[in-house]
Image 1 (spheres, rainbow, N blue to C red):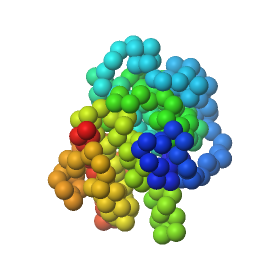
Image 2: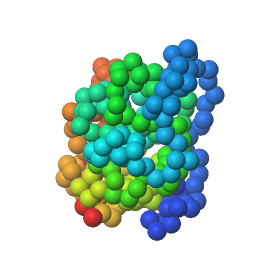
Image 3: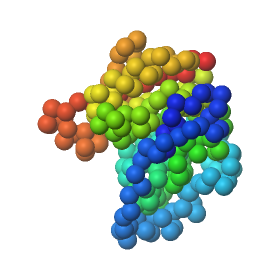
Image 4: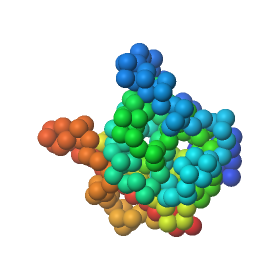
Length: 238
């Protein structure tokens, strides 16, 4: 996951007052993950230092772009990139083993429409993603910070969703998914109150899982145990 702005105003997203919303876990990479990190980053990697994204330079074309924040091990993001070659996909993840795993699988798959940041998502949004440049932003199963005193660390907050809105093209979508009902309810409350968005499922409603979001092994296991998953899709309308 990435740092969360502590409710910055839309007009001050360049220097929001932020709190840490992820714990950067230390971990040894597997051989495959290290290979992905070492060999895949020159081909698929992007950095903050490169500044504003230039699609023609990075992808060699100007296609609809999808940004995923906190892709974990990257399994579903890779599948989406494979299944939708007409779109370009950008992933952001702070944990190196997950980045290495995705890069290794991307090399093996030989795909061309995927690029990856190993950086804080808020910094990437501020420094690298031009306003109005994204067709969809994806936030799947972010850390729920389930203890009430930690709810302020949750990523879906009013300031953050306005930061996302500025990066979406008009008509673009912000798609969230969580398996924590309390967080789903908070997401819905924040998004329903957010300026410039419309709930694609109708006011106060969650949406069925869109076909483009792969069903993960985690979800399949949860379904067997009777656990719920809630999707929300909000369109930028201005």
